[in-house]
Length: 465
Image 1: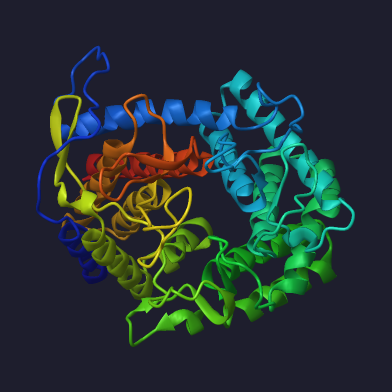
Image 2: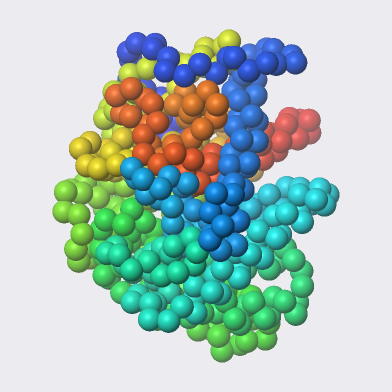
């Protein structure tokens, strides 16, 4: 594992091209009670401030929405942007990922009664919204419908459907919340009325090769989708078993095993990385490399520790960083200023190298905030795996530093008032596309949480030496 992690470190650092030191955003103007004593402390201070803003903005994007009385409680907008681009919809996938972040907040704040009550209300509303959209009549793609209007009505326009990862992620999020409530009667009711519908849909649809990927551009069999479905079915089988639903548990477990048999198909030995899609049946045709950040996101969202540290995933992350490091002009900048300290930068990363979506049309693709946050999270979590097996070579600490470079990159291209966008201009670094993208904030908070866990465990380990 040490050798594999070294590959990632080398790739991450080599992805930073030499170049100028222009600074589009300054993050040294906030008042500090005690000035940071190092670049690391400066970055940590920014991360804490950004976490607070991100949490606030995520909650603002969950209905009830102040300027939209028609929004149904429990609906989560992908972004409040209603034009250029219009992201003011409740996407099944995005909503489930964001609400999963709220479940994490419950675990981190068990003694904050007022806060816990607020988050539980949002999650209860989300379950009610889910049950509502599941029961809508005449859904052309069933539970695989990609998105809904914020008032809970069906979206009738043309879109890339079905998206069969959404129900799987939604089921997992609801199951995680039910485990938190520790209410056996409610768990059985919600499992039967909401969760089982999504999992049964996955069982029926997982072989379908006409579904869309998470970028809503390619049709085929997708690594992200299968991994999401596999994880949801495994956890669904366990919950069904605990509820005494033996036949359903067996069905879910058997289907998960069948899905698992297809994972190796995505490894491309000639290219040396995991590809995003196999058995392509339509959609975008310019994606020649099949190298895509959604593989990284799949591992973070739905993988386990063994997959995260596998040689194939490490090689894929290394290739993503190598390609994106050389692709975008902003990666010529090597450092940024945070609270008076110059901090080194990692590479800004986008969706895939052939991307042409610029946030509000087509030209040339840009780096994405949520993908760059994901690179930080990946290195933090890989470092944690090394620390857990007794790393004594300092590689875990080094990987922590590499993760910090990606977080510094996110800091550099986040507005001084902490506003996050979907994308950053590949040339100037300024925000592009949907403003206040909910997923961008959730990805940032997931990464900083991974860092806090790693730092805490490394500190405890140091005390025991």
